[in-house]
Image: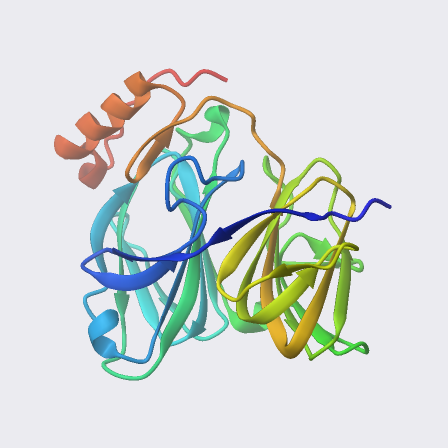
Length: 290
């Protein structure tokens, strides 16, 4: 099997979103820093309530999926379809915005640590105007495999050693692992050849591939093609997100929270939102080229 090597490093940069929530953004910090089908990865992490209490008030999405993974703290999701979901430590929300949704994500705490990630995952043209849907996944539903070489793997999506995460398959066939490594420990896992893959080190530092190239704390590392991933923790240990998905290789136009295939579709999304059709659930059905 060919081991994937570290091809490019994208350091995260300070940013803010929502009503001023402070975060760090790696993928998606510019529209050229994507890794098909992945559009954006944000990490929010603070012990200061002033950095997160304002939250993410109601806002729209169309044409992609958002995946929120909480490490610490509590966040509540509400949307215009009447759905409410509470996310606590270790929980995941996998939301398919598709044709359109208006939702809010608001902290349910006034003090303490808030830490987690939000990933944006593109949808193929043929699925962009499907009905919106979402799934709340509790921490206990996510397999956590403690292994004998000094690491643990939480399997949010995809499979590892014949154990499937709660999300698997679909057009992009995503893989989403949270890997915890003791100092000097080595993780090796298989990812389908042809999938685009990247890593994000959120604690410690790591060495990637057989070439053992360093990947610093709070940086994303884009990987070459291959069928195996190798990660070695440095002397402080490491916690790393491992993400992979089947590339869509389709034209893409993004305007803020709308990700479509043509400018015409973006203009329709803006019109649907501004005219109130998002809020009423009266989504404008336009032709989306497959």
